[in-house]
Image: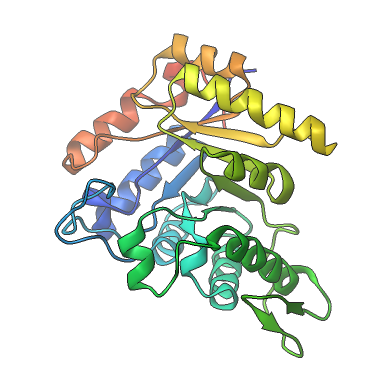
Amino acid sequence: MTPTVGLFAVNLHACAEPRAAARVAELAEDLGYDSLWVADHVVLPSPRTDSSPLDPDVPVLDPLIALAHLAAHTERIALGTGIIVLPQRNPLILAKQLASVDVLSQGRLIFGTAVGYLEPELRALGVPLENRGTRADEYLAAMRSLWNDDKPAFHGRHVDFEGVDAHPRPVQRPVPVVTGGHSRAALQRAVRHADGWYGWMLGRRAASESITRLRAMADEAGRASPHISVSPPRAPDAEHVRAYGELGVDRLILVPPLGAPLADVERFVEAHAPHRLGARPAR
């Protein structure tokens, strides 16, 4: 089966401007993209470090606020966080924000998350690198309790609450969760705690290796293999789309030229429309 096609970076660079973001979102929906994805960086190292993906002066809108804006300008396309660095967010506040986006979009949210890696950002937000994986696992479990339980409660090392509630609940029950990361721990997290996995900047060989590992872990755990999304390192043609599909990729999330002006982003979105790539149409 060929993958569907999503679009990344709808909250940074040119798309940090509200009219530009709305224009690109509307164009992507009209052309049959299945999803829009937004990045998450609260702060960036200044001056830029080798590990930082962006210069510190690159405009990056908050992903949840950006998705609310995109929800108001679209009707069908799914709205994904790609990804939220979960350990650096308060889980109760984040659960409220995500539920609100799902309600405002009438059930179009995809919650993409990972544990993070950018030490200066985590440190500035008061989050130690150590134990960020267990912190993320607790946060996700606590959030799911708030979304799904009649009497939400969670008692863990990093988050502890009971006797509280939060409404409205998300429209989707459950909210689809996608986890990112290429390490063994990240892949295990996708199998154990998520519905899908997001591989960032993976060529076909690297994607194949990760998918093979995911499937083996899923078999070992007695679970179904997660839904697989991949952002390729360069824009694919129809042959590459078919090849990714043969590997088991369910969705390709395309990254337009970062830092390009709006006109170039629009040309990219048009040139790589799903029907031009022979991709599976959005539902």
